[in-house]
Amino acid sequence: MIKPLARRTLLAAALTLPALGALAAPLTLGFSQVGAESEWRSANTASIKAAARDAGITLKFADAQQKQENQVKAIRSYIAQRVDVIAFSPVVESGWDTVLKEAKAAGIPVILTDRAVKVSDPSLYVSFIGSDFVEEGRKAARWLLERAAKNPNAALNIVELQGTVGSAPAIDRKKGFEEVIKANPRLQIIRSQSGEFTRAKGKEVMESFLKQRDKKIDVLYAHNDDMAIGAIQAIEEAGLKPGQDIVIISIDGVRGAFEAMKAGKLNVTVECNPLLGPQLMQLARDVVAKKPVEKRITVNEGVFPAEVAAKELPNRKY
Ligand code: AHR
Image (cartoon, rainbow, N blue to C red; front, side):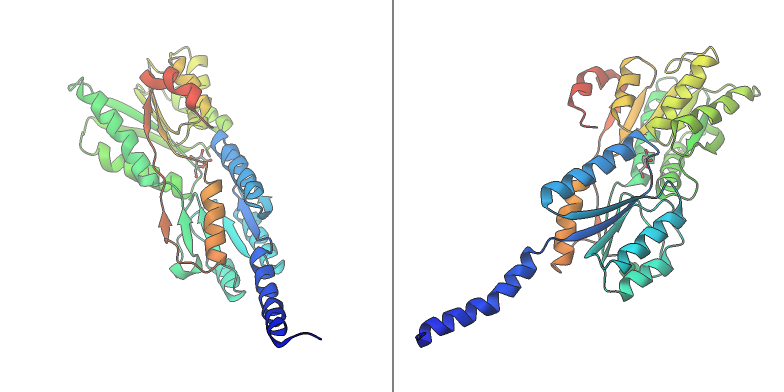
């Protein structure tokens, strides 16, 4: 016969076990990635997959191949599968209200990573973790202003390779850069077009910039390293020296950019850290556990001019 004390202990254990079980139940995260358009994106995907594995989180991952409709489909399928939390890196800023309302109605929290969205109701997502793209544009322009100050009478014609049309980094990097170069009217953007964040398109658009011979190009500002690397090829094929005949500024800080800087073909890269996986997994856990989380989590990043490339290259993690 079970004594009253033992019975109470057994009863308490029976009541506690399901709660412990619920705590230990593996968490499922549905993640919709933009695509695989750049070295940065590949590093971001690798970081998310590795961090999910390390954290014991079940990751459902979908590559949207740069299409918003694919991301909407992926999010809807995560809702239908009743995942614990959804995260995504939105290809463009707008057009998310409907699907995010569906997630909210289903009681599934949504985390934004890397890129922001424009929505009517900020409660449609719980948190956004990623870089400050406006500041990245400002940093790129500040570097150019300092360089231009060494030669105060020279006018500089700038061409700009923008990222994906309508994406947060393309909009914000343009905005930040323009805001700062205004301080020096001798710095003028003479052409600006999207290179879709890819090497192939960066090369193609740079070729077309170079063919229009009405104005000399002094500076290339590329919204990411991949487009700059594509453009470097176009510049070389046109018989010019990238990094010398045309000063090149880009953003991301991927290994390929450091190699280009070491070879003297790129002048500076502004860091944008793709290694968001570990922070995302912690955030996902906190959100599911209903802990209070910051609405906006930013990442600390540096600026790397060509002069430090050889020294920094061995330390790069992506
Ligand atoms: O959203 C981050 C940007 O997207 C990176 O700068 C770029 O390389 C990527 O494709």
